[in-house]
Length: 488
Ligand code: BG6
Image 1 (spheres, rainbow, N blue to C red):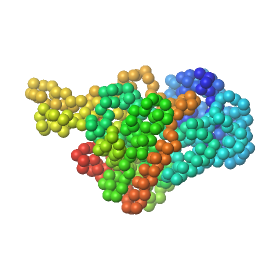
Image 2 (cartoon, rainbow, N blue to C red; image 1 turned 90 degrees about the vertical axis):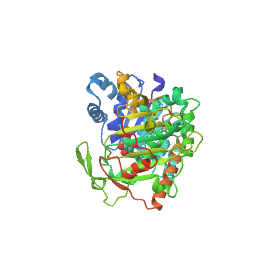
Image 3 (cartoon, rainbow, N blue to C red; image 1 turned 180 degrees about the vertical axis):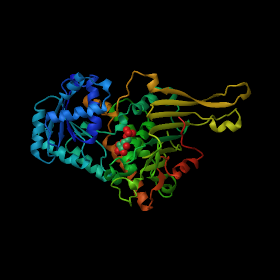
Image 4 (cartoon, protein in one colour; image 1 turned 60 degrees about the horizontal axis):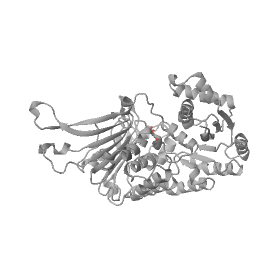
C-alpha cells in the first residue's frame, strides 16, 4: 500500500537499539509485505561509513537476530536495497542539507526517528527545520527517556513541539507495542463478561508485576541517574496501569484512548506522609544467584559508584480516586535481578457474597484473572469447581480456564513491539504512542514520590539477586491479608 510509504531517517543508526531491534523489526515488516515498496531508510550516525559498509553492518545484525527460516537471500537483499547512509555531525548545518537532498521533493513523508540521547532532540529538530527538510507531513519518533523529571520533560517536549505539531509526534513506550498489552483493550472492551465486572463492586484488588532477570548490563552510567522508578514505572508500569484502569474510550481513535488514560493518571493518589514508609518499597540488589548462576550486586557492577542509593526495585500500593476504582488497591512491583522474567497482571475478583460451602474454604473462594504479558503470553481465569472423588463431598478446588496464545494460535507469530510501532508510524496512526500530557502527568506523580523519598531520606533496602525483592515488599501486601500471585 503506497499510501504508507515514508522516507525514514534514523538518527543513531549504528546504536544499540537500532542494531538490536529496529532493523529486525523493519525487515519483518518488509518480508510480510507491510512496508510500501517505495519506502526508503536513511541511516544517520557519526561513524565514517558508506552505503555498502552500512548495509553490510545491517546484514550482520539481521543474520544474528532473525531466525534462519525467516530470511532468504532475496528478502534480505530487497530490504538492504532500501538503505542509504549519511555520516553526520549532529551540530553541523551541512549535514542537514544532505538529509534535505536525500529526501528531495519526494511526496513520502519524511519520518525522523531519534534514537539518540534526548538532550539532542531539540537541536536536531531545529536544524532539520532550518535546513528546510520538513513540511506539514513530516513526523518525528522519539524514544524514552523523555527527561528525568517534569521540568526536564517539559523542556524536551517544548523543543520538539517548537518544530512539530503534537499530531506529528510519536513518543514511544515499547510496552504499548506489545501484542499482549494491546490485547488488554480487546479483553476489556470486547468481552461483556469482563467489561461488566470491571469496577470496585466486583474487583477487590489488582496486581501488576514486571520482573526482569537482567541487571544493569553495562548501562550503569545511565541507570544510576535514573533508577527503576524512572526507568520502568514512569513509563511502562504507568501505561499498563492506564490500560487496566481506564474507562472505555468511545472509539479507538488515538485521542479517545489517550484522553481516558490521562484521566487515570490524574486520579492516581499521590504518596504523602507516613504512606511513604508503609506503601512504597525501594530496593537495591546485592549479590545472589539466578538460575544457578552467581551474579554480582548492583554496587559491584562494572563502573559502579559504591555509595549509590539508586533503586533497582520498586513496589507500591496505590489507589485510583474515581467512581470505578475507589477503595480498590493496586499493588505494583518491578525490579531487576528477579528470579524470572515475568510481566503479569492479576485481577482479583471479590468473593461470593452469600457462601454455602465449607467455611474453611472461604479464602480460596474468589476468581482471579491472570493476564500473562510475557513470556508465555496467555490469559487464565481461576475458577472454583467441585473436587472429584467420592470422599470429597462438596469440597472445592481451583483450576484455570486457560488460553495459551502460542498453543491456541500456533501459526501466528507474536511480532516484536517495534514491528507494530513502526507499522503504525508508517500508517500515521498515533493510538499506540504517548501524548505529551500523559508523560507530564506521570512525571508529576513520580516527582512527588521522589521528593518524598528525599525529604524522608529513604534509602533502598537490600535484596539478594534472584529473590522477589526486599522482604518488606511482601509484607506490604500480606499486611492487607493478601499475597503476590505466584502460581501461573
Ligand atoms: C526498557 C528499560 O525501557 O525496558 C530497561 O530501559 C528494561 O531497563 C526494558 O530492561 C524492559 O523491556 P522488556 O521488553 O524486555 O520487558
